[in-house]
Length: 330
Image (cartoon, rainbow, N blue to C red; front, side, top):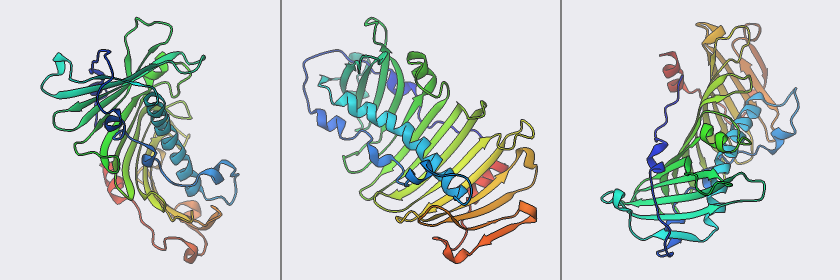
């Protein structure tokens, strides 16, 4: 399985601006940028205190994925919020080289951060003639004012965006960020987040591509989630990694997790490939409001195992991601 970035990082990196007297409505540009509504709303606090045993493995995996996605996205959102808290510099019209596609460019920064921050950061936002936007967070060594800025995060926003509803995507180049700041992890790979924000909820797709997993190997992961802001949600996860260390072969784990606003939920999983060969493993794991397993079944532990009462499940029927399984098998 390989994830494919839908938005090229270089698209917004080519934007150029020149310092000038602030003009225009900065809030109009700032308001359409992504905010914390793109984050997954699953409660993960319990997982941080979990120990082995009766804790639901499906919940723990879903919570870990949530933390990975939210933590990475939060880094982007925090940078956007921090830089746009500084006074903006505006180019009321697009630079000559962008004439015809871009009608206005806004810039915030450079922002130097605290004393131990090694980079200066600027945010560039271009409003296109079709009412869409490109934006880029760019960094350079703070100690070298003459150095060129490098795009580490780039995004796009579709036409018609408002502060209430918008569709867009952004991607992080971990390698570029790590080169400029060795404290940035992971050291390589790319993170992508595409989102569709509505008045009551969000649909989103997140992907890690070519980053180093905990076992030191390249790993790829794709997540999709659908949720209401103050309620329950659902997430699909497809992860390619060496989960069975018998050999170096990589397996694919495909999980569909669903949860209620109470926190109770269910995960239904496929495991295929690698050391599993042609065998397709299945498992279902339900957790209650205490995030501990109330029902579990699989087709591989001692030729099949079932524990607990399915009536305790927040979702009575299993729901597997058959489309992802078909794609992984083909």
